[in-house]
Length: 128
Image: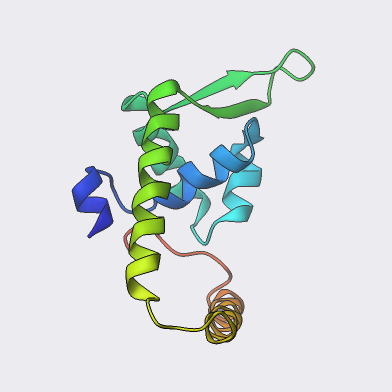
């Protein structure tokens, strides 16, 4: 699996990608963006910070707000994740027409929305 090859824990890929797409996002906003419980997001953020992949920075305008940003090592890891993900997608979807891919992802998004409604939109990192 991708996680094992890159040496990362469950939940990290989603968190890293969201912070990469939204530099300076708060931990609360991050928790609202992933299908993880706040406690699981806290655990993942602490682990990423301990591994020097993510930094929490207080902002000048609100000292209570901690902006999450990737470190250079975190940015490098996200680049590697995205390259590997692109390679895997090309392999998995070889011979599948774009229209069929669009239908697949539409259905998948609806299934995830149903799961989010059923389970309150939050899973533990170990469940994801």
